[in-house]
Length: 357
Image (spheres, rainbow, N blue to C red):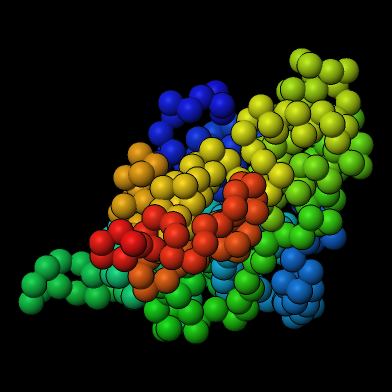
């Protein structure tokens, strides 16, 4: 995949170097880089400590672990933690996703084939269909499902007993989970974005596994542009490794990392071409706003959903853009980041009076 090809539509978030969606290459590399136990897992100290207590107590009782709900942005380690839960409990794991379960029968087929103690990882659990969701309530609480046979007045509900299992649900939007489902999880952990220091540890560990020579300053440069996300840090590391092998002696220094990420258009704060295009349009064309989302999307030549769901979350989190009832507004930090001077009050586009005064 050519990461620096600007012809690739930004709506395909997996094509962005700083995107949080894992494509085939990412998934293959992540499988090799995943930590195998909680001691090896970096970051998420509070969740890791609490989860360690839950798993140790379950092992001491000789019981299956409570159902676990993990929420947070993509790329923070929810899938990795689910695999660690299975490993710590000495149980197999089965992986599926909410969008793949569109009918209650789909879920019944999966649940009925589980073995005792098995871990079922359900990614994007908030996107599961409502009939399957209602079946899951009983399965989680009573380890039983009712399979409906027939239609109409002659339909019969056949109860099906299930072996005890552990459901690990992952979601990027915990607010979309209905309260009855959320309340059935014995443990809920929220995954936070990583600090630069934690990401440096992640990058150093990945560099060792990939047999890449990495200096501390080079790791700091990569971590600072990784948007608080280990998945992005590992992806940037691989691209910087390629640059170092072709353009240098293979050693990743601070200078080499900065040069490589400049080639891939990832700046010092982790903004890429799309992010800077949104900020540039907001500042230069509309004087910093306020401006409507649709107008801003047209100005950068992207779909409204792309700007709102792909670019804006990070810009808001970085304090470069604000969402207001009147529209999108740039912050002073956005002007400073692009090296521009804010217009005088009332002097910029979008701030003029009715007759242009």
